[in-house]
Image (cartoon, rainbow, N blue to C red; front, side):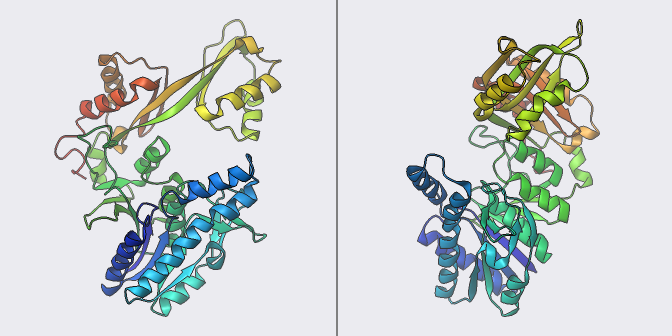
Length: 411
């Protein structure tokens, strides 16, 4: 088999842990498999580098910030290759530009366009373990770019897709994907197999096990992803195409994203094109909007409410005040923060009725008011007050019996 293994910052957080990873890689190699290793910066290193940059400039240039941030992974690949050599193996380290992980030029949030895997296949052909820096790439002009937080996950799955690897193993400090955050719900259970679609929803709704784009790559190129712990040999969670058995499970997981906010524009003209005028300045300035709800028309006017990240609230209000006064004066623009989005996810919703009703009943029993609701084929999301987020997650987890034996493991 050709196996791509990715190790996060915690897994390579010390010299001893790097040595442990090296031994794990060599054990995989001794079992007859070709292996490519993707590593992140050592835990805390990226934050240290960014803070160093901010001490020099409160608003550092993003191109130069990428140059600085990428050095964390450069240290990791060098140390990992050395550790493999010290354990009696053979390895070659590669940075993003050496592999030629080609990205666009959106510094700090670049997207991968193509990967030239020739350097990696050459190393594998010579019997070596290829150690590749995650999180980084290079644009068409040769500038170093980074892929954003969690970008090493995306690097790993993208490299696995380029190599047509048999599996991409994501090693982390947890041993799989759980029905809820075990720190919030002690009865949360590990899921044996989960579909790409479910994992994509969970990742986008607050679950932090995998970066969203890594799941997108897996789904697009049909790369099996195995999420497992770097501290034991236990089977983890497989992220795979949807299987028939998955539909028998009503809900796969419950998650919450905190730091939500909402903005309401009251009494805007109810005519064609108004929504585009409101959201254009937000989109042009990188403000991501999530849920959008428009009230029924009354006397030619309507109310429009949308949610966004709390960190973007002030900027969004400024853009609306600057560009939308002719549609809605500032006194008719209101906002609220300290909100959370609680979601239940499962492909079983496609074939089972009553999930929405049960969700609302469970929240009502806890006297939790729902501000906004958003649904898709496989998810139901509710905006609630942030102080009730953990209570809601526990109540929904118990209400859908996700902690009972077999609920998650039946897959």
